[in-house]
Image 1 (cartoon, rainbow, N blue to C red):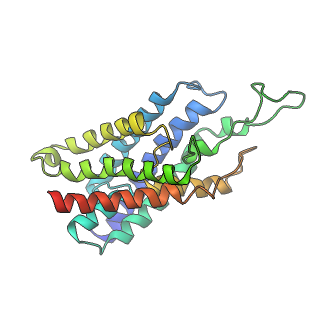
Image 2: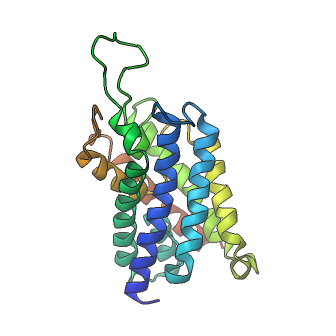
Length: 249
């Protein structure tokens, strides 16, 4: 695969992933959305379907990695680092693009995110915090615990992805992408409670950058003091998974 194909594939695939993922978070979070308050299970499946659509779309061009933690894990396992930077750049650009597209889909809902004059605090007219639509926010802010959660959850993602390659026929049949999508749903349901399961540095960082600059009324903070955890944690988890796979398999 050429650098150009890898870059284009990762941009398109990651943009689709974030469009679905940020889209489902917007659907559940924002007022005047038909899916408002439909819950965590809906969010988990929305992200899983985003992986499914993005990875299948990108696979012919780049293999559909869509995640720096996966890219790092594969590089540590194989020892091939030459194209890693192309993957990472495409993933970050794609994540930012997907966040903008999700914002445009819910533009009217974002614009309605205002505090109407004459209402009191705690009413339905209070502005909705929007960062959680784009990036992760811990339920309990504890840097050590949050970092450990992201590391473990990312190992639980990357190690099985690497191991799936040992099962003959999965790659040729295209079933691997479907299984990975279900794996992401499972991680969301089982391990997503503490931090919102970034498990992907580009998925968190790209949309957070976009959130900082988007003209969303009453959007609240972009919480840059926390932003290092969903980047560093998944990178460590991806590296550990690559090393463990290389040693054990």
